[in-house]
Amino acid sequence: MNTPIHAPSSSPSSSSSSYMLRPPSCLSHPSRNIKCPMLLPQAICTSQKKYWCFRAHVEASFNTNPLKNYTSVSCSTWWSEAQSLVSYKTHNKQLFTVGSLATSTAQDVSDTTLIGGDKIGVLLLNLGGPETLEDVQPFLFNLFADPDIIRLPRIFSFLQKPLAQFVSVARAPKSKEGYASIGGGSPLRRMTDEQAEELKKSLWEKNVPAKVYVGMRYWHPFTEEAIEQIKRDGITKLVILPLYPQFSISTSGSSLRLLESIFREDEYLVNMQHTVIPSWYKREGYIKAMANLIEKELKSFDCPEEVMIFFSAHGVPLAYVEEAGDPYKAEMEECVDLIMEELETRKITNACTLAYQSLVPLGSVEELLAAYDSQRRELPPPVIVWEWGWTKSAETWNGRVAMLAVLLLLSFEFTADKGLLHQMGIWPLLR
Ligand SMILES: C=CC1=C(C)c2cc3[nH]c(cc4nc(cc5[nH]c(cc1n2)c(C)c5CCC(=O)O)C(CCC(=O)O)=C4C)c(C)c3C=C
Ligand SMILES: [Fe+2]
Image (cartoon, rainbow, N blue to C red):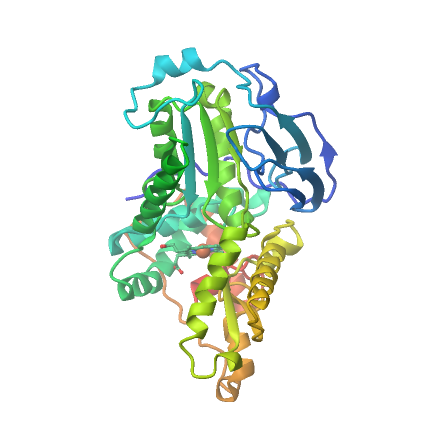
């Protein structure tokens, strides 16, 4: 069961380091017909900060309360047709009168009270995960059909779905093994729902009666479903919070791009005031929480000061960082520095190291572990196990030309041990 996805229709624009200033986006233009990105990442942060947005860099002062004054910094998105950098300020005003729209489409939301005529929503964005082993292959299809995960050159974009079908079928057995070993499915939905509930409680305690929604990128509840609920509830102000502390094109970027396309085509959403928190790894609360966890774990060792702190991060293909300007690696490294600084204030000065998990050539856990384990270092490279996903679902492929092209691509990769899939970090997924 492949649940329809709304993968961005345009393939990612090639990376460019040139940015131009553009007037504030649609938010400052009440025209409903304007077609421009609504969801360039905007930040709500604290104090005077330097903010890195991919390759651009802006300085702005921020106010902490999203519901009062806020300054938003829209950063250029690498995928944006017209790459641009926007900085602007709004003051506690609804920029548009949405009342009529809201009443015409909204149902009553019993647990949402109004703040100055507004209905506040928070949309939590996450990846989503298969809830059962049967979900694994269609979940993987959705993931690989996303051009922010498998970045094909525009000329090959017609291969996106056939390739997604192929890679998902080939990857499914290994993924299933993993999910089977953790109880037969992903715990992400349950955990995200719990986070949403806790966030809602906490906001209500602070007299912010907001409704909190969960929108997953690749599995239920899909972002599109959350957006429909937001519209039904008549939300007039929305805070969009990707649940990834660090920004990556492949995670927050992908979700925001999807939202951008949904917003662009929807009259209700175009007129809804919204703000995006693109990343939040610098937040004091987050850094302290991470430090607390580490401090607690260290105490369980006999000689805590001798323990090396091993930060393990999800990897992204190197090309994202080097060519597309993904700030993920820089943000991750800064995050580790901040956590270590926080630990230092607690007189914890252990050695630490950061490695990125498998799949992608940012520096893998395997490589790093090899440095510590001489036996492992002498092991031969892993054997490539090839499982052909030649199943019934292959019949659904988008025509013979695409299938032939995929096969040619794969046989080249296989025989030459290099090529597009290697370059994009997809090849390891097939192992
Ligand atoms: C090239 C492929 C992938 C990129 C790039 C990627 C980036 C990325 N992913 C996360 C967080 C998660 N990924 C999860 C699952 C998952 N991710 C990929 C591939 C890429 N991820 C695959 C194939 C899978 C499925 C599992 C598997 O087969 O290995 C999950 C788990 C979701 C769940 O089921 O609960 C998370 C979380 C980040 C943070 C990231 C880039 C920074
Ligand atoms: Fe992932």
